[in-house]
Length: 109
Image (cartoon, rainbow, N blue to C red; front, side, top):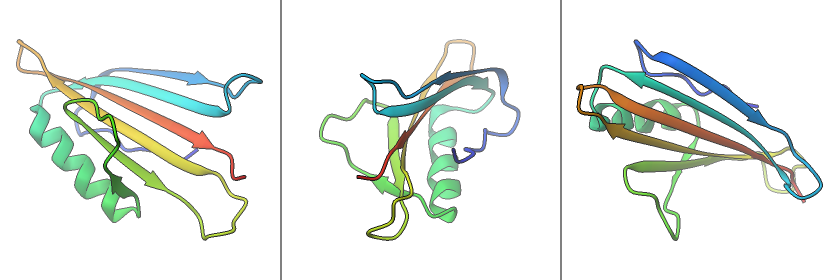
């Protein structure tokens, strides 16, 4: 699974891996953390960094507010997995931001 960078100064980092199963065809990694930046700074960071690493910004049909969606895949016809990531950020009252990275690995068909 690709590594998604964390915003500089991230703290209270938690990671959860959800394996592929008979009823769930996606392997998922959820990373949550807090940082001392605002929501706009965090989302701008991910737009720049992920684009530089070859991720494509997507527009989902039913977007979650305050979130960005990206995907990356191999060449057409490749049997390599396709990856999708949703980055969401929410400003908190204590001037920190909650960030969630939801990374999915989809098997090629």
